[in-house]
Image (tube, rainbow, N blue to C red; front, side, top):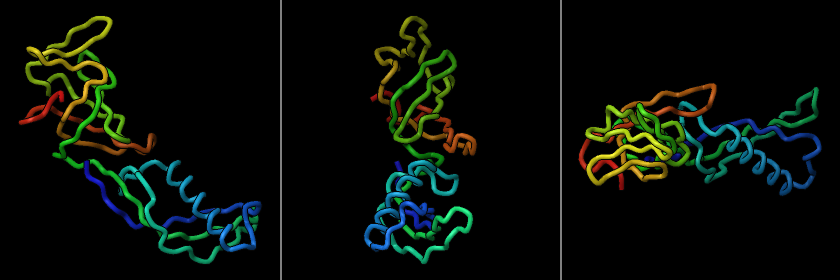
Length: 175
């Protein structure tokens, strides 16, 4: 899992009701609103998934919005992010098993598909608890798996990445 540190500039809107003449309370309101905005945005194509805000660099002078009375503050901060990379080795857990493959979850990444074709020698076993089996190894729900990222794409509507994974390679598979 690759973590990156990114410097970002966002506009933080503070409503008129949250404004305070005391500088410390205003700073607190800006920080709380920034954390809420980062949580709500979840991810971006450029930076990947937002993991944590780890530094506040600058809060610039606010600009009053005429219609609402709120104040827009340009804020510069650093944030730890996680972005998938082709060829990266990751660890995740099996969330859903289908005849054509499995869906995995790894950290904030929830849409990771591993095709049955990329799981060499594993055979699908239908039933109440479907699974893939190979000799004495099995892939069932909640199994922890080491896999390699074959490719990924950004889905703007969902604000998340979709990954294609494989277990083809040395030291990959159930742990």
